[in-house]
Length: 123
Image 1 (cartoon, helix red, strand yellow):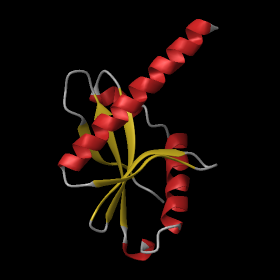
Image 2 (tube, one colour; image 1 turned 45 degrees about the vertical axis):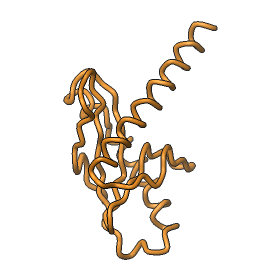
Image 3 (cartoon, rainbow, N blue to C red; image 1 turned 180 degrees about the vertical axis):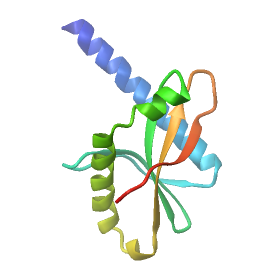
Image 4 (cartoon, helix red, strand yellow; image 1 turned 90 degrees about the vertical axis):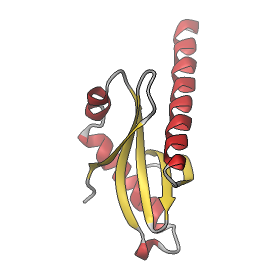
């Protein structure tokens, strides 16, 4: 029992570190991080970033390879992320003028995070 709690804590810390690195990579590209781990009943979005009228809904994946990170976003995950993004957007006063893109940032061992644009397309 204690071993599984320890593994869970380690995974949680690794996830937070990965999200922090992903945020840093996006900020280096001129994006402002609006939300981290945005949660609703529909699901969770790892990062929401904005530059001008472009809003990025970002899934962060820490994996050994870029391909493994890309394959880790299932169709069900996409739908949950999309539903959560709809809720977040509906709460923005300027939502009508925003462009939204679903991106991924892959955090790979010993590399700068890789930003993959349009990892999937919303409805």
